[in-house]
Amino acid sequence: GEWIESMWDCMLVGDVSCIPFFLATVVIGNLVVLNLF
Image (cartoon, rainbow, N blue to C red; front, side, top):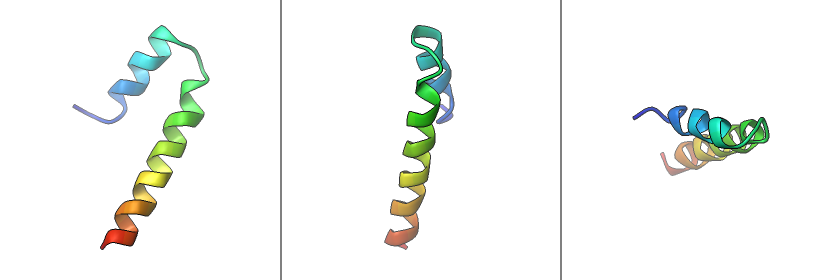
């Protein structure tokens, strides 16, 4: 599945507070991948 599908599921159950969490996850994930290679 796509990474954003879990954000939609979180927003259905929760509220808008999911957005900053997933943005931070994507940014940190990209930094980790860039540092590995």
